[in-house]
Length: 402
Image: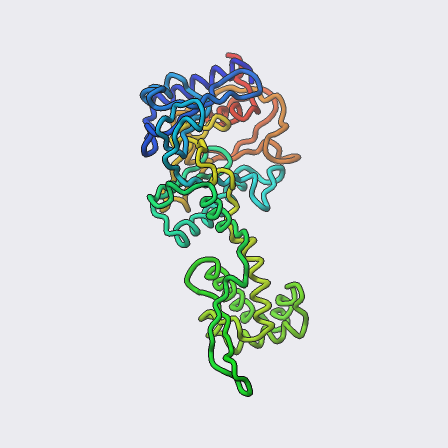
C-alpha cells in the first residue's frame, strides 16, 4: 500500500470515528485494549496491554489514533494494563465464539464470492445460536458481524464467566459434535418380558425435545416423512445410499417405518434392527452437518482480544456491526455494514491488476457491495467511495493522484 493510500484511509477512518459514538463493552475499565495502527510495510504491529486509564476517553482515542483495527479483551483483570498476562490478575472472561467464512466446510475462497461465503457463515451462525439458546439456555448473548470474514458471538451469562479453559473446551466439543456417540444418545427402557424369556425386553429411544438426541430424532422423522412420500422403488434406492444397507435391510427398514410411524415419532427406534441401523448411520450425517464449525482457540482462550463493535475493519472498511437476534435473518453484511460516512461520494482509484479480486475468467472483478454490483477493471476508474475504501483496504487498489 502506497503512503498516499494509507494517508487517505487514515483520514477517512478519523472522520468516521469523529462522527460515530461507540458503546464500550460491560466492565470496559477491567479489560485490556489493543489496536493496530496504519504502519508502512506489509507487516502489522499490534499495540496492546492498554487499559482505559491508559487510553482515556474511547471516542477521543479513536478519533486521535484512527487505528486500522481495534480490540478489547474477553478477560477482565485486576490490572488490565500490566505488561504480562501473569501480572494482570485474571478475574473472569466472556465466552466468545468466532466463525470465519473461509474456514467453513464446503466453502472455497477461490470459487465462492464474498457474499456467498458470508451467507454460508450466517447459516453456521444460526446453528451455533441454536446450541447456545436451546441446549445451554444462554440469555446474555451479543451477535456481531466482524466486518471481515464472519461473525462473533459474545456470551456474558453470569454462570459462565469464571469457566476455565478446560470447561470452555467441553462447550466447544459439544457444539462441534466432538466425541458425541450414538450409543450415548439412546435411552434404554425395560418394556416387559417376551415369550419364553425370563429377562425383560428393552426399548431403545431417542429423546425428542432437545440436545443432540433431539436433533437426530428430528432429522430421522423428516427422513421417514420423505421416504413415505416417495414411490417404493425410489424409497428403497434412497435407503441403499447408506453404507451396509442392501436390498433386504432397505425393505425391512421401509416396512418398519410404514407400520410404526407413531412409535418413531414418539422416539422409538427399536421398531426393527434394520431401522435401528439406519438411525445409527443417519446420526453420523447429523453430527457432521449440524455441528457448529467454530474456531476452537478463540473460545477456549480466556485472554483473547476480539474486535470492538462499532469500529472499522481495516481490511475491508466495513463496520464491525452488532446484529440483534430478531434482525439476523434480514441482515445483509455487505450492505448493512457499509458506513454511511462513505456513502454519497465518489473517488478515483487505480487498480494495478485484477489478481486477487473475486470471480474467475470473464467474471473477474465482479463485486457486490452496498446493495449494488460493480465491475472493477484494471487501471484508473471512478467508483463510490465505499467501494474504493473496500478495495484499498484489501490491497487491491491505490488512491489515484489528484
